[in-house]
Image (cartoon, rainbow, N blue to C red; front, top):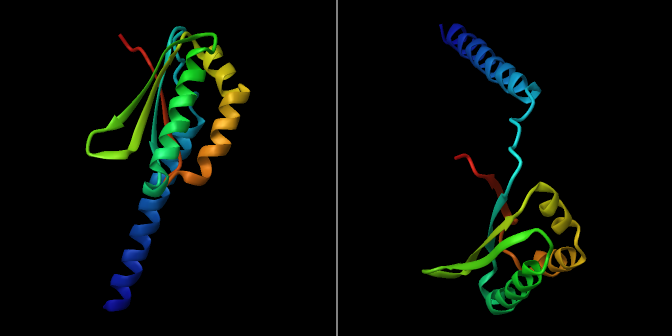
Length: 133
C-alpha cells in the first residue's frame, strides 16, 4: 500500500510540474506587451551595508546630481527609508526608452555601478514602469 501511495504521489508531482512547465513555456513564448511611447519611470531600491552607509549615500547623491544633467531626464530624486537609513530608493523619470538606454550607457552610470557594487548588501532592485493612464 505504501508503495502505491508513493508512486501515486510521484505521478501526481510529475503531472503538476509538467503543467506548470507547460504554462511557463507558453507565457515565455508570448511577446511582452508593447510599452507605449512616452516617459519611463525607473524605481531602484538600494540596500547599502550598514558600515558603508555614509560613503554609499554620498555616492548616490553624486549619482543623482550627475543623472539630472543627462539629456532626457525629467526628474531624479533620492529617497531614504525613514527607519533604515541604509535603505534608499532612486526615483528617475526619463522622457522615453531611448533616454533611459542612453543613461544606462553613460560613463558616469558605469563608474557609479563599479563603486557601489562592493558596498551594497543586495543587488540593485531596478523596476522600470510606464504610465498606464
